[in-house]
Length: 109
Image: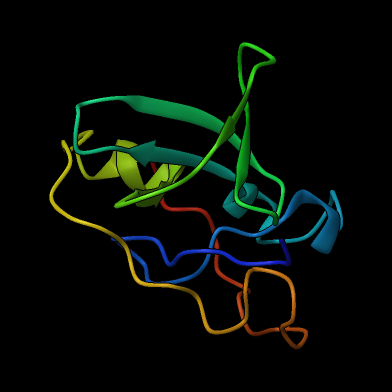
């Protein structure tokens, strides 16, 4: 399995792998995500770039199927919406992007 990612339903930027960005980067907040599934599951954690979420509870979740992805900050700002359909695949896989491509301030919560 190689790198892949999904675009956030709100801002259309991808979930960024924690290993692809510096801890002091403006977009560091894009590594914390919320994944919603058709069966109502809500998974919160950091995206690793390989289709897995390292959960806040230290569990690891492999994402398969019709997943809907949000950056945590975008999801909170949107009022914690429920599942509405799958997210688009990210063209740059949350890893292969140029400096500045995803430089976006965290939404004000």
